[in-house]
Image (tube, rainbow, N blue to C red; front, side):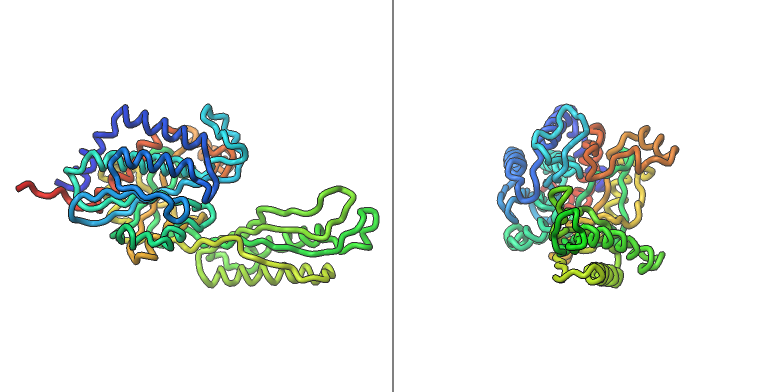
Length: 418
């Protein structure tokens, strides 16, 4: 029996009762989002469900992470990863199960990831006679900070639970439902998030000559930063420099002492990263000097993500299996993304391959209309938008199907009966 035949048999368990249970779980998670390293309610719910499925469960791994292990005889160990933190975003979807936590939202689909992994755990537990090996379900905190995967590894993840043979995972995106998209090789960008403090001299708004205005200093810096990619990075290379926050002042008639900027930098190559970081520092310090600042600006790192590289052979093997089950016409290569992910930390720290793919979550008709009109970026809410809302059906069952098929592709075959 082939791996995809085994997958089809296991997926027969994805029936209406399980579907309804997963939809209820998704709605509950979406309504109760929690920020990075604060995912206590989410972790408790995941742990409860994993125990009900007879997995060995350990909580508090990497602060708030959960590891659920199911040992089913000799065979490979397959790590299945889902992140479960939310974002500081005020939801505007209007969903009946909208966030009840003001100012916090599952705006990146991590609630989908958790639900799909729980569904896969249920199918694998119910099909133990069809595979052998160990399932290591890892529910990771703080992906949005780029810290959660490393925190779990540093908490002796592999020493306590075993080293996997492969790391598998998925991320819902603003792609048509039914799409599974995977790019082998360099798949996700490196990120450097920086905070910049620029210091001036405060004064009354009516006497700007008595000030060194940090607002103007910061505004000039923002504009000059727009030239880094357009004038210092070759067109064949990829980089993004975004100023996501600029904060200064408290009142219209007060020139403040200080302005703060938060920058987000995405790059696909180490030498490009170095060029961009050097340019940012040069511009920040140069604008402060031109403005006559009497104190040097401060540049500090908020968080970083490493490059995420998919293993070529692992992707080929995994996508071939998923394609056999859902149809190869539903597979696509999205190219390298400017987004970032820390799932690769699980692979590099164990020196094992990673296969990480994207899962469509947008109604196909809605997507097709926007695509035809050339308005996708305007009409299709993207991840991190307060309007981001993957369609529940069939995104959840698609995700469970893809993840279960991938897991069974890497787990061992059922032991022969005596």
